[in-house]
Image 1: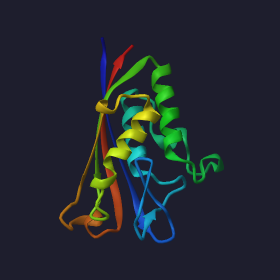
Image 2: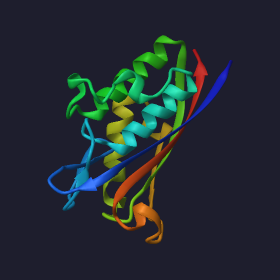
Image 3: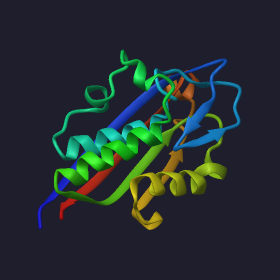
Length: 159
């Protein structure tokens, strides 16, 4: 059996008049993330980790931000398409570990729903997908509440 590891990172700016969607969940907050799609920073980081592990480029290569087909698209749809690409290349997803970096809002109340939605989109058991959240103690752009970032690590194995 062959294994491949991938790391993904994404960041989006917080702005007014946008919904805040993270991990496929709409979160009550006075700002949302700016982006061509729904700007789901967590789903995007996971997509990039998967694509990187399979040496398939990044999310921008497959879903460019100048393509109107992806304007305001639900990022879980993009994640489903990435998982299909991964499986078509002969890999299965062993597990995903991810971390959201956000000073506010508090994300703990939403993490179980995020895990459920992401696992469903990826066709994984919920125990194969971890979502954590942390603040950066008011340091950096996330600490100043200018944006939200996410990291993801995945392990792929041949099927």
